[in-house]
Image (tube, rainbow, N blue to C red; front, side, top):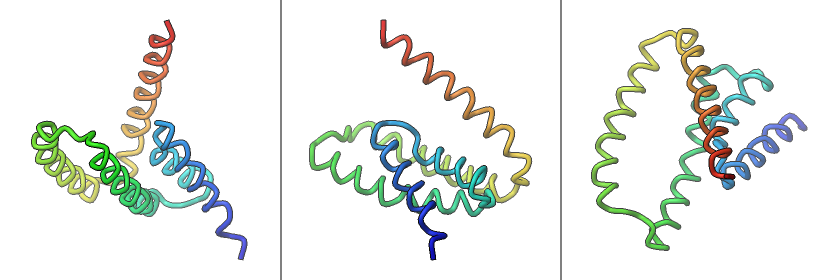
Length: 123
């Protein structure tokens, strides 16, 4: 019965971090695979399900507050759809073990870039 408590707390915590601008979905992925024993493919599926309602709510609030740049959306959506389709095909065509190291390297580089950016903003 208590097996659901830790995953719910993790989801709640990463949701709060997401609201603060920290990559909650990425943290959720890492926690599920490294600490909760969820295989990577399942964790990615859960991460997508986690993202959809939060992205939808954010889109509604941004639209309500007139914060959407329609010109940017017109250019970003087609590129995003094509990139997502290509990435989905690649993710199913390539062994997940092959993708782990590049993904880890991407996270490391992104984290370092964010840390360097934060230091530059404090000056």
